[in-house]
Image (tube, rainbow, N blue to C red; front, top):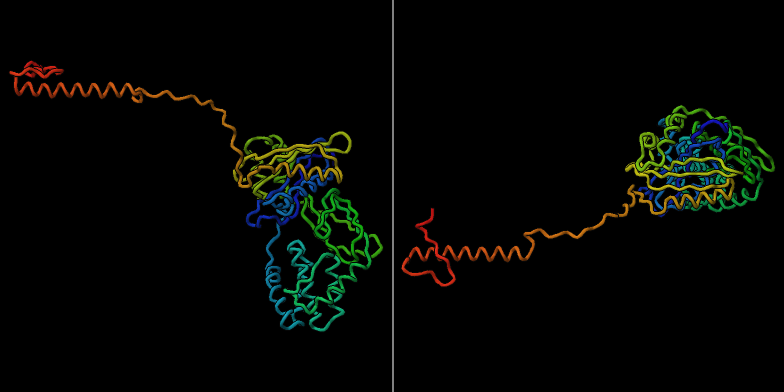
Length: 418
């Protein structure tokens, strides 16, 4: 695998910033691998870049694997998602027995279609199922459900506004008991190896990974690799034990539009141009992001890699910035990559503009035209006055030829004019 040309796109999950979601600019990261660089090395560096981008106001990531793993519209899922709010109203004020029964159906549906459901909605469905049972007097089942959701959302806070204040005390007790309960280890292996592994939304880096200290119960494992479809599976962790989950990824034919060897070769030839060329434009269009960071990664001596990054704006097609650095492929290297990402965005106009080049044109003082010279107008006005006086004098002479011209005037003999 080290000798095969590979292309990896990676990103961080969307992270709230000072800017509102509608003001944020989406971006993705593409790594072109050279000289035997591996996707494992790229995954570690990309994690570091994401750390840095999180600190850039107004920018959010859209994972290219998410963009390439297109999901069909499922009406049943859409209906269930729109039903969550009415169920929450019912849990607080209405028929709790019907509410938790419907919430159970939604939980089961969401578990079958994990790729289609935001994790926050899955958590909400579990909580509605639990609180509905509490309100209906089924305390044991209520506590079991709460324990299930706390296992994969350890930091979950109880939302009184949504679920009502009556079940808060039960939730707090269950949470304390669950957190102080059994913990185990989850080992995740993937085929192919090197795919980035997320457990309950947290990235653990390229596979294989080992996650220690997970609460006993169900956890959600998400796996992303550019040439394959994203997968999400539920893995059960048992207290004081190791559990191994092996995930075989399905190839994604659509990924060839941006990850084939031909595309990779064309990208190499276009990088560094002041304006995005055809292949870069095509990749940006397929991903649908407003910005695209393209990097070249090459191994160097030891356990380091050299990374060159190019930031393009997909609307204006400008190359807005570039950076390069040699980074270690470890935790320290991730911190270094985070700094490089922040530097890459220094002074970048998120609207797509670029800084105007310095104007070095020599300014030469303009010479006034002849009609702008003072002496020109003095001569012109003076000549006109003399001519006018001569004409007037001629007219006087014509009226009275016996008199000579006044002093200072010439006589014009009109009879002698041709």
